[in-house]
Length: 165
Image (cartoon, rainbow, N blue to C red; front, side, top):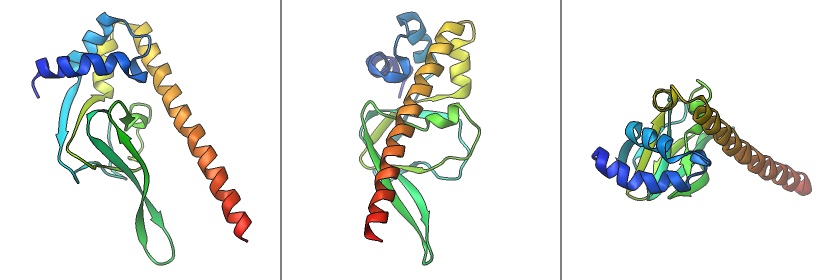
């Protein structure tokens, strides 16, 4: 996708996206210069569990499924954790840590994502510590929301298991 198309599609997506909450238009323009547009066909693996990565993805069209390997006595299986759609983000932990990817993400439909690497974040905010700080705080808030949702799900699952015993 050309940078003009990224700018056209991306500007509105960024304005509404939680990661860019309270970011001014000048800073958004700097992000539009470094964002990459990636296109995936249905079934394509966008990221794979266990691989290293340094890029987050914002879905601009289509849907993805997040899958996690589950180890049990019989086999290793892959379980669906979530389905994400336009406006949602995945891969954000890789902007914060240098750990392997925690899940596999596959395109459910033809999907287009805008992506941002750690280096892109640095390039877009190198001379703007306030914007950098705001994006990092927004990122921390989004990760915290996901952690809280996981805690609720995990507590419910444990309660359900105990009820069966």
